[in-house]
Structures are given as structure tokens and as C-alpha cells.
Length: 403
Picture (tube, one colour):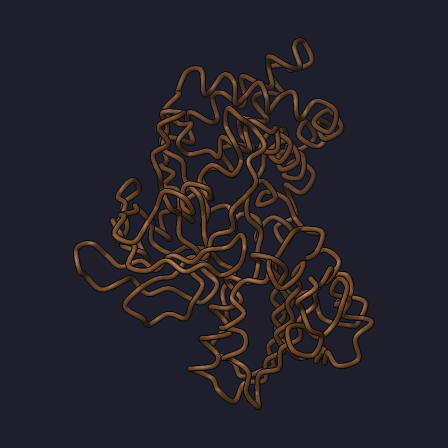
């Protein structure tokens, strides 16, 4: 718990962080990478180049300061961060480095306003957070029987194009050992050495099929390249263009707390858009095989048929317990309503009479953040308990909520 002397100083710094947060995080990353370039491998350099990571961290620091005594608000965010950290192999020693440069950035940007008392309060607040995350990550490593930095080599045994921009890779362990168990909805980190920037880069991809098979499947959307030096889509493009059957990839164990609750038989509603379909397919196929009587509504939104990934999985899953509803925002000429999709336009749950929203169902959302915000708002307006709604967030938005 934050000390009585530090609490008012942290509270008083909230408006300062709102104004100077991005300047502080830009300074933080610059100074830290300057002194420890090896840490660049732990960060998405595409998000760094675009400024998205700096903006997200600034928002997260501000949110932490504003909610430092609100455990209910912080707990799900800390869990999400701990799983992400475990997937990239964060170690306790790296928290010392981050703390040093974060406090240094606050002092540098705020100048004389960064009094010794304020810096001491933020040092206390930082380590309060760090110690909790270190403990959570230690438990995750123990559960996964994983040592940070140890990557498992996987061979690509199959590669399938799912849509114009989405490809699935099927992976098996090079050493022939059984695959670790995962829960439907979890993801793995994939590590690739990028010669052009002389750094390893890590990306997270949901496991896109049910557990229990002798392979893992990840399904990757090719992201557009928008920066010549450090393109945001460099890893997805490498996986599409350079990784072939027989290639080997280094991957982490499965992590992530956006997981299907398999201990209940209550109705399940899965809402996705775009490549957000990937963890939903894992959940859908798991329910189909392990809980065939469980009622499921599977609603998915895509731009059109050419960009609609994993259509076969969705079609194969339909049965008397599983109903599917497909939305195409801009159907292509060859798309046929009633065959390829059910409704034209964006997903609007409040406008579609054939979508049943049971009050006792579990709801899972995955897709672009604006999509998830809109669906969550509709669910809340429909009387759904917010504790029944789960959202998956990747990238810079990982550090921020959807409210």
C-alpha cells in the first residue's frame, strides 16, 4: 500500500502527467535504449517509430496514478501486463533498469518541479507496482515451467492462405516432445531476427485452433508497411513472405488471461471482427468438441469475402447448439447474402433481431478497439453484467482499458 506521505504527491501529479506524459515517455525510451540497446528486442520497434507505444505508456502511467488505490480497476490491467511480460521473457532485473530511466525522465522533463519528495513518491509507487508484477510473472513462469529467455524451436509443417491478407502456420516442436497445454484464447510470442534493424523482434499471435492436437496453429494478418525504416508490419510480412514449410520459428509457451471458461455450461456469445476471429475460433472449436450441448452464438464482422478469414472453421462448427451470424461491411461483387454472409454493414447487435443476448451468457470480444468499445456499450445497454464481458487487447492498447 502506498504510504500516507506519498499518496498526496502522486494524486497531485495526475494533471501534470496528463500534460507532460508523452514527453516523459519519449525521454524515457530514448534514454533507456541509448544506454541499453539490447532491450530494443523486447519492444515493438514499429510502435516505437510511430509513437504509439509512447502514447500508450503515457496513458498507462496517468491511469496508474489516477487509480493507484483502486484495486478493482487495476487488477485486470496488471494481469494482462503480467501475461504479456511473461510471453516476452521479462526478468526482475529489467524492472530496475526501467525504474531508473522512468524516474530520470520525470526529473528531466519536469525540471525544478520534480522535487526530491515527488521523485521519492514516484519511486515508491513504481516499486509497489513492479514488485506485484514480478510476483505475478514468477507464478506464470512456474506454472509454464519456463525460464525467461528460453525459446522453443518449432517447425512449420503446413501453411494455408485463409484470405487475401491472412495466412495460417501450423507448428510442431523440432525436438518431437509433446506440446504444452494451452487454454482456448491464449497466445504465444514468435521471435524473428530482423537483419535490416539488427534486432530480434517479438510478436504475439493467438493460437487459432482447439487444444489437444499434435500441432499449434497461428493465424497472421499481413499488416501494411507504413514506415520504411522500421515498418509496423515487418514481422507479419516476414511470416507471409519468408517463412515456408520446413522453416523453424522460436516461440514462447502459451500465455494470456483472455481464456474460455470451460467449467460451466452457460450460453456463450463470441463477437469478433477482422483477425480478432483467431482466439474465437480456438474457443469455438473447443466448445464444439468438448461441450457439444453448450449454446453458442458466434458473430463475426469482415470487410467482405476476400478478407474473411477462417470461413471453413466457422462453417464446420455450425450445429444445433452453435449459430453463426456473419456481417460484411462492403460485400464484394461475388459475395452472396444468405450464403457468404447474413447482414450487410457493420455489426450492430442492437439492430439485429436474430441475435440472442442471454443475460446469463459469457461474452467474449476481440477485434479493433473501436469495435470492442461499440459492442461492449451495446451489451451494457442491453443489461448484460459487465463482469460477464471479456475483451482481448494487443499492442499499445494493452496498457489501457476499453471504458
